[in-house]
Every structure is written in C-alpha cells, then in structure tokens.
Amino acid sequence: MTQYEYTLDELSRLIDHTNLHAYASAKDMKKLCDEAKKYHFRMVAINQVQSKLCYNELKDTDIDIGAAISFPLGQTTVESKLFDIKNAIDNGANEIDYVINITEVKNGNFDYIKDEMEQIVRVCHEDNVLIKVIFENAYLTKDEIKHVAQIAKEVKPDFIKTSTGFGPSGAKVEDVKLMKSVVGDDVSVKAAGGIRNSDDFLAMISAGADRIGASSGIPIINAIKKRMQDENVDTIKIDRDYKKNMK
Image (tube, rainbow, N blue to C red):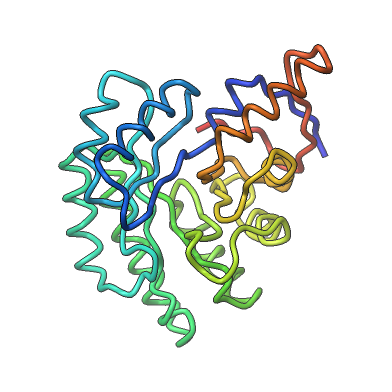
C-alpha cells in the first residue's frame, strides 16, 4: 500500500462529468460543458449524438469529449459499434466508452469479446483516441468479470469500466478491486454508477480507480474543497495498492 497526495485540481481531473439522459437538451449540454470548464473536469461523458455540440463548446480547452457507444445495453454488432465510433470521432470525440456485448459473455463466447475489443481498441488508438471498455458488472459473475478483465490485460484498452449507471446497480468497491487485481498497472479502471458523495469517490480511488464517472461531480468536489479548507491542507492523501495514474 502506497500513500499518494492529490491536489483539488488533480481530483477534479479524475472526474468524467456526465449527462447521458435521453432527454438532455442542447441547453443541458452547454450547461454540462460550462460546469466542466469551471471545475476543470477531465471529460464530459455524453451520448454520441452530442459529440459535435460539445466539441464546439470545448474545442479551446483541455477537457475531452467522451462519446458513449452502444449505450447502455451493448447489444449491437461490432460493425455498428465501429461505425458509431468513427462517426463520434469525426464529430470531435476524443474519448470513447463502449459497452461490451453482454449476451456473448453470458454465452461464454469470450473469443467474440476479445475480437470486438481488439477491433475497437485498434480503431481508437489509430486516431489517438482514448478507449474505455464498459463491463456492466451488475449482469456478470465474478468469474466473468475476471475473464473479461484478463482479455483487457492482453488487448490493452486505456480503461476498463464498471458500469453504465443504467443497470440494476453501479460501481462497487469490491468490483474495482477485483478488476484492478487482474489488470494491474497495465490498464486503468474507471468506476461509474451511483457515486454521489465524496466518501464514495475517495473510496473508489483508494480501491484502484483512476477515473470516476459521475453526474454529482460538483457536490463531490465542493465537499472535498470544504474538507481541505477546514483541515487547512493543500492535498488529500489516499492509500492505494497501485500507482497513481492521471491519464
């Protein structure tokens, strides 16, 4: 276990500021982007169709545009996912979060999962786009989580991710630890779904997450800021089994 120190800005940069609602309007997207700029979040996590709008709002900043692909079910063909990914990139997305084909995991067809992941990772990395693989752990057994994580360790996407936030449950500390125990420092882990307060946020980081997807990023960061002011400190110390990774 190693203790790492994080400034408030470094903690903000771990957050993917999220609005994936079907009813999100252009006004909502502009608000999301304005909030991301104010708090210096790492990315806005959006549905693919919002990529160009958010790109235009954020093109002069260091905040990424993250498009969700085959969201939230994952039940589209590899060809469909690749088309949507290329379209999102063409419209300004520079991060992709895609959902694996959960049915094929349940079928035990891990060759399909590996081929899908290899094709998507290749396309994204050719365009220097960061790629995250969403497992949706609520539907998987622990053995299935480990099996897909082992595939990711071989294929090397940038991140594996716990959840969409639309399943029956979201991120769990034990799942983050399990995923990280398989991939180690070869692949980063993103925790997402149901992370609404600063204690849960910090627990996910301690468990090994290097990115947090949340629609509650603002109250989380405000709570940590108040804590730091009350304690008169410039950093938050977090114990981790894995190295600090800010990518």
